[in-house]
Image 1 (cartoon, rainbow, N blue to C red):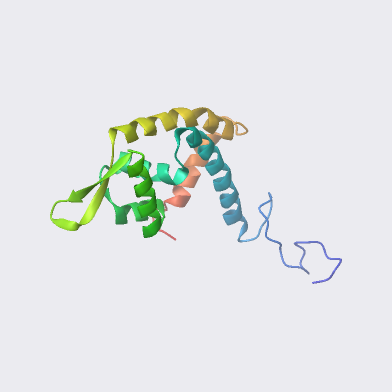
Image 2 (cartoon, rainbow, N blue to C red; image 1 turned 90 degrees about the vertical axis):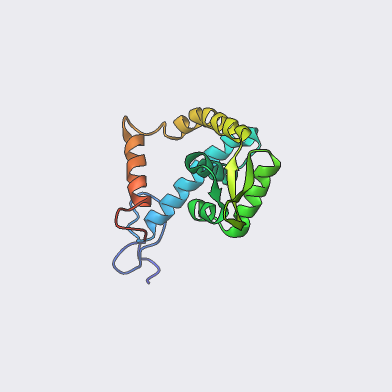
Length: 163
């Protein structure tokens, strides 16, 4: 690489950034990471007054959607690890937001279930997040928030399987 060659020219390798126009194969991943950080910080802001973190809410989402769920399935659904899920479920139990129950036919397995208090907090979190979520997409044009959600859904859940 020459000292006076500009970044991205034929004589120098492309630099990886998350700035618009970066053609690096890593650019999309970096943009998605920045978008995740931004969205996560907005959602953390909504959850903080309720006394939970995003990792707790991720488990509540699964429980509200699926009903009682064994911990190994919570690991898969949230992208967490076994120890992390155990800590989150412990926290949720201490707060009265979830309970562990025995699974009929297998004394070793316990299912986690959202409590009525957990459902109330789940609903309150959605109310608290609404204005923050609107602020997060305020710079997008008409229909673009829905288009972004559609594109990210197809990207995150490809029809041909996971990458």
